[in-house]
Length: 324
Ligand SMILES: NC(=O)c1ccc[n+]([C@@H]2O[C@H](COP(=O)([O-])OP(=O)(O)OC[C@H]3O[C@@H](n4cnc5c(N)ncnc54)[C@H](O)[C@@H]3O)[C@@H](O)[C@H]2O)c1
Image (tube, rainbow, N blue to C red; front, top):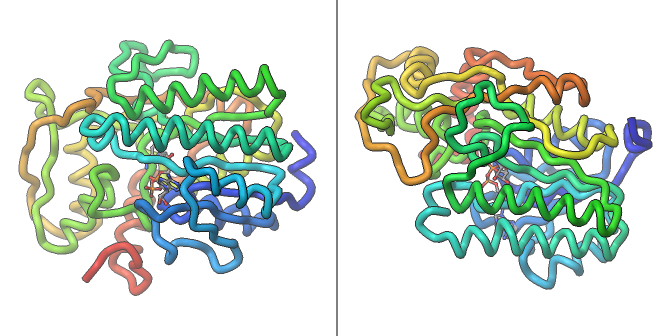
């Protein structure tokens, strides 16, 4: 336990106008912390930002980011800002590197300059391990990244180790599986639950991308966004360092996921089939026992409950991310 567990701290959430970051900002506010957000709205929306958080419109890779740090003087920086699509990273590796590597370094330099006490970095357990044979995959398995997105996330983790050694910056990395829930972009290139729900509610057949030798689709490890939020709370309450898988801890094939979403939407629309995209892993199943052992975190929301809550959100009046 760190001293952050018992007092109110100032937390800057980068990417806090996005899907997961905005829920994390909600979670920190609910725990009584003071929250500021740094986001350039590349894929996020000001509508997602909680009313009690201060929003700074800034690019994390730009020199102006340091002015935000100067003004806010946060105790903790939680880094969610990223280019988060594997497909986009394969199309434009330079863009991904600018945001996910250069942006991270700019944030880390500023953290050192302003004496930040704790850094939470978001990585991807759904991408960095590649198609390794050890499943469920633990944090001890050597990553074999297959896409520029995964390469840059892993590089970011290695930079954290450098900043820890060189400057004593206390840091933790949360390696998410496939996070889903309210506010996820149903029109994005990633976020299959939101894409399926969005399409089915509009009466359009979604596409299941698959390799030819996997007729029921690839496997992914899904985690509901509220579970991810609890991991971010534990990450600042604890002094633990290093990487932690944060996922549901069970593999689900895309075909199986589609049927669950179809049932929750109450439709018999079927899905079209499409080829796997560059960088798509065949299998992903994460071992989450380290997070349970060290952080006291485990996933609590079942896939069926999480999908039901997501469908209810997209059906409801507060659907801020699904245009009519
Ligand atoms: N969604 C998932 O399943 C998943 C899985 C693993 C890891 N992650 C990671 O979680 C984090 C959040 O992802 P998300 O799904 O909420 O995506 P998102 O696109 O909704 O959120 C990313 C946020 O970062 C902001 N941003 C992007 N570039 C920026 C820049 N240069 N400066 C400032 N802000 C910038 C965007 O505007 C957006 O608000 C990312 O780091 C992503 O890589 C997500």
